[in-house]
Image (cartoon, rainbow over all chains, first blue to last red; front, side):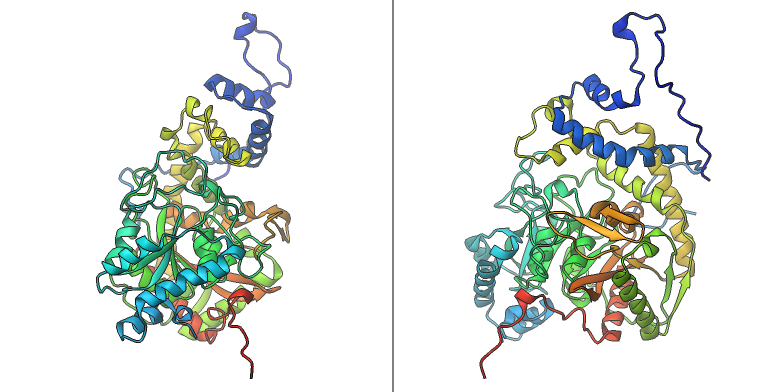
Length: 87
Length: 455
């Protein structure tokens, strides 16, 4: 079920694509947390970033593995967790 | 011996027979809390007048006059829950929660509110707005979380029963660490009304923490609003899954759980058989993702920029990190849920229960909640969540029961059953208690042992 995941396709350093500087996308995985929070307008101090960084290092590899799982079943449409799934 | 040292059902029977005055029992419970709680910080608030009013108005139900503790996760008519935190994701207010009504209608007396891990977010219980609860077996160690106070209260025999909540193992972890029996009911069977996430959560249930399975049956019956008939778990087919959950465990846990499995099979005339259940790690992550995204509607950037400064840095950081979780992963988590539910349904055609160690190592120190496993050193949360999430993800019931001591600390086995078979798990737990001569359910931590009397 688990598909081989290709290596990271984000170059470590990407050149400019010719957009105005403010429109150049972040190109480093390290920027994900501060950039993600900033794009949502969420303030984070150094302590926040340290905690989030620790959580991220714990969860992100597993999340990437989860995203690569090939599951050919859709979520149950009328989920009833008190019972076994309908056959 | 004080009636307070009887089992929950023993207290109820003594009151019903007229051998114990419930008002005196309530006073004894309050005195016991005053005496022992400073070492445990299990009970964060008592309200003697409210408790006496409850007793005065109590119906002659199955728990008439029996003092119990309820987790700080449920509102009471005179008190809003704080969820162990300086600030909750959603507002709270006093009210008649489902577990409150269930206890009231069964005649029980709520004698206090139990501590809990901040925002219900850990298996350790080492952080709370009230300060951490302490493990009655060793007060320098974690009581387990998030239902830390209910477990420490029952473990320290402040009361014989308490109501907790389990979203990812939050009844079973503290039950294990404090040497108790804890039932995570089938989703939807136990009272949930009034919980701040009742409308959105698909993982959280209320459930009992008690010394043994018969007491859990009684208290769960109140929470279910139904009698949970006792039966014999004859010919029990017990499935074991040979994976990280069962294999990457401390030697003392492995030894006790294997002995318990053998005793359970022999005691029921049953059998232990290996079964396959792949992708447990994905199921665990799926549970964490679902549990951490279901109430995201309550969060907003502006809320997150105005969090109470008394929240711990970990709570604050995790709340913010939730906003970065990818939607695709949340959808995938639901697919994993469907997959695991189908696999479990197939497994429960072959076996009646699936057994695992509840957690892979006994209670770690409060100051540094790390556990040593064959694979290395892990945080207790990383290690504990492995065996707990599946039941919450899929809705099945699970029970954790004490099966030994390792270096003086309790060790537990978890049994999971098919949907609605909570009664079978209680039957199986009672069968194992009998097979063990009730040794582990009657074991008392040092601070709860009777004072030696002079000859």
